[in-house]
Length: 237
Length: 179
Image (cartoon, rainbow over all chains, first blue to last red):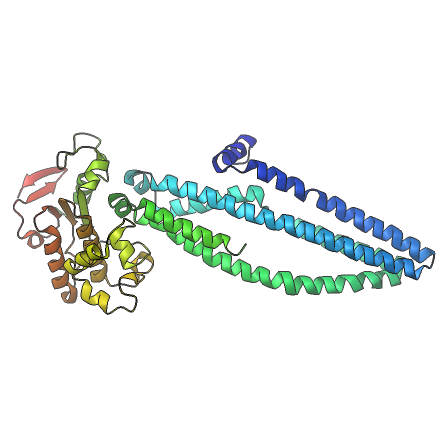
């Protein structure tokens, strides 16, 4: 899974490489733009403070707010498109795996414990998804916290007024983040967990009821059930 | 018949076209390809595994089937009375691994599924070995409807379960002996 040829094979199986490249490229400018906006803001804000131009400082703050909002909207839109893409891509991989297992003979299915099939199904799909959807790592969080602390200390030592201004921006940002993003995210995670459980149960059926499914040619029906619960997985996005 | 672990269920799975024979030939109704054999065989097992769907789904297995065909299969499997008493009727969810229905009901749903398939050959794998007093009559009656006019191969470790069979074989050491 880790080498390039495996990744290429995975994309060959599931498709969507062009969309993946486009969305990855669209994600790229965020950090650069974010840094530029902050740098320009700081430069203009310091200039305004140095020249004691309160009107200019308000304009800079207003422009910074608009710039940040636009950047936030851009990033949110790209991330939303990316999440939908990843969910669909993972669903496609799962369906392909499910279809492959449903076409195996009973001897092949019974050769391994049902738990191993389910674990493989989930683990393989998760490792495939991890290629596209790496979560934020703990080192990232630590680094960000250290950066914030050091910046705050420098700003306090440099100018307490500017620090106060930053805090005036940061507090509403944190509150909005908690109310509008964090809470829906928990709800979303719970919904996803429920949908994943149902989906796993459908995956389980193809292994535990393999003899009945093969004898009564019910693989298509079970694949339909699996697709239905896969769609439930996509719904929250 | 044969003792537990002698290979009775494996033999039935070979006859059902679920397993491919390493040596020799499996021929059912003049057919040798497992996928052709499977179309002509229905099977009822001791440990019934139901799909996590409705009673209807478990009988039709997703194949197009008229309400009348389903009703006839339910009647023959002694299910109609029980289904009529359910709030959702035939569309009642049987639960994951059939957890919302009793063992006897699950077995009769499996029998209804086999009746609905209407295959000329019926394989019974210890189909009557786990019945309790309350449901055994209903299941036996359902099995009678399923096997009427069909070629039946029934497997059991108990001699009394094979009463009514025209020929009885004993499986021992991988070989069949006339019992």
